[in-house]
Image 1: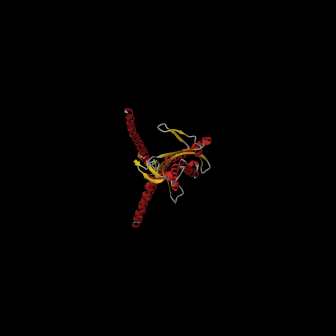
Image 2: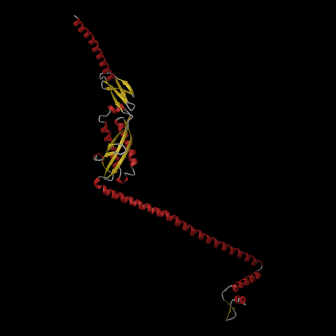
Image 3: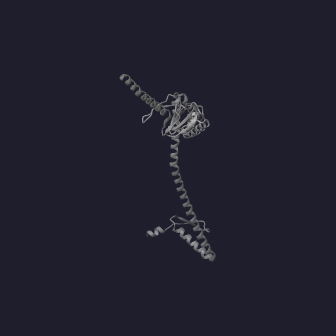
Length: 321
């Protein structure tokens, strides 16, 4: 009798425990299929029976259990990167890259030269619904459009202008990529296009390096010539200006002297008009005085005589006596 009672007591104790355990398991299963977390860098898209239902923000969120609703967390604030022609193996201070991805980086320039172009793009997801549902092969689509845009821009330019137009290529590529992605409804925005290397293929790289060195030498010689030109021109201009100033000074002196002579002639002429005879005698005497005061020998010729009478300047001898 006691044994049967003990067995019944055990059965009474085990059934409630079993029910409790089942309820706990159901609660855990229900919680696991209804509660989900969205990180600060994400938005979550919820589908109900496979169709878009709503978008929720960061934090703890709820959905219908048992697969009725499904959540897809999309990193809308994370900057994602795609690399072309190379691949970062190890990032950090001493980054390591893989550069043997040749096919996608080999392109033809506008002047029919083959070059290898390495570049990368950075983008963010701006529309999580469009990102999830509009395009099936999202990553490959990004790579295909990016490669097509860079191919087009490289094909529009000559090889020797690539470096000088690097910034223009990057800007145009960013605009064209965003236009294409917007038309496809991919839901992303490219924020950076960066060209890494623009080099000729390995087989002809040495020849291209020689050409570039020759171009650099030419530019160096031109710059050196300009430096010499810029140094010599001011000097020669200074010398020319000095000669001009000397000539102008000489001209001014001659003009002033001529004007003085004119003034003296006019003064004599005025005196002559007043007293012609006196003026003639004064001019004659002044002329004779000037002649005899000179250091040269002079000869006087009388028009009525056939012989000449040399007259020497005896003033020096007289002074000596």
